[in-house]
Image (cartoon, rainbow, N blue to C red; front, side, top):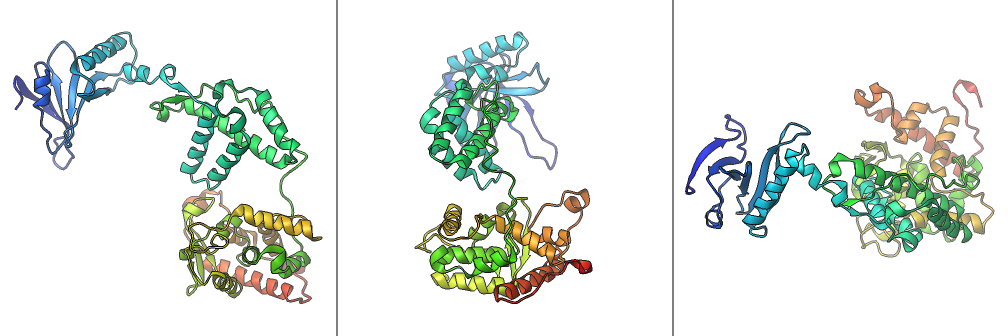
Length: 447
């Protein structure tokens, strides 16, 4: 027992509840009495019974001693504890001074904890800090593109204005950066950088006003988004509408390994044979997701766009292609499509590598320009020509259903319907690539 002390109260003492910190009273702290404090099984607090109202220390089971001031917030009306520092790094005298200063703030009707963490006491954030914080937030939300976005910003933005305070950036800075990108012949990349910068500055505005980030030591102080006044070049890209015809699907299937590269060719073929899954979901798939015996590919929420499990039936064509991929690297490694050249290394095939391979094919041959994700639209469209219902096509491609019933109540997996549609699709795909002269018929006999 501490000298000159008595028990005040014990928090959370109802049967079956977890005990809160035990609160003990002491007349006046001294260095001697603080050093005499001993850790217990549970955290406990010791309060002074002096003129410094609410001044206390908290002792943890590990032996740490921390100064606090207990007070009632004039903003919320709730009891709060203001941290004042750890003893002996913060001395008793210094902690007492902090407590008295906080009491003065409280007397003026302000919450001392909010004042301490107010924007004026935080460091102004640079553009580099903004880009890092924005992509970190993307990563926390499960956005797979976070790494590529940061890489693009590091290459095109940070060398020019990375050390600028985010609040000091003007539209002409953005305009000059985008001009440099356009001038080197990359107008699409210019639009991408503009889009990411606009999102980053919007994030910075929200960051400063987010109550969850009151403890952040960085503030961006952005009054308005400097990217908003810089127009996008709408002439270089629009909503994707490219789809491959049946003849183009056959031609793509038959291109040589030299024209595409064997792994990339198999990746494109598997995109088609798995009913147009998202390219990144295919090339980044770990082997553990495939159950070839049950003929099912299970994609977990962490790798899907809508954050839901996606169970995809595998056809004979898809399984044959998976076996061909395995044959390339002798079933080594953890990925279906490991990094080029060394399947033993961690990581998977690069999405940029697949895109460049397709771009090279279109440049070197007379193949009309397309990108890997166009195969998703192609399958969706060609399946419609086969008379496969749209709701089944949506489920095969894991498009999120937006109605309340589908989102919250429908737990049926539709595996039978999806398997029948996948088999129908791959059967017709097999006939097409083998040169068969078959015309797809819509339901009701309409061609």
